[in-house]
Image 1 (cartoon, rainbow, N blue to C red):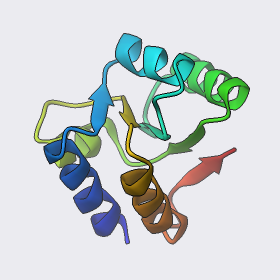
Image 2: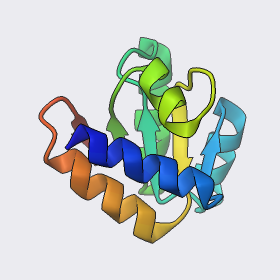
Image 3: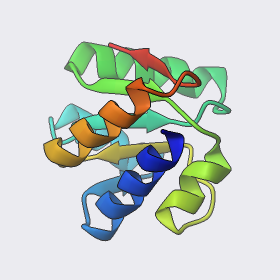
Length: 108
């Protein structure tokens, strides 16, 4: 199922529905544009806490998933620590694939 989630993430990127980078993702969360936030499982403890807190207070679903290299590779970029999906359809599809993956920690 991890491959399906990563494949869906790549499709969302090609459709222009993915934002990356700390400041860009935080801004999207604050403005209500982020439907889903993915944080690399190997991100620092401070980064994980920051996104848990922000996503929780703004009601955005967040999941810790994959490594920074894997996230970057799925997007066709260098390593990525944090990613926001801005399209609800893609976000729901990726969440569905992630919920079937036992290596993912979902945070509501």
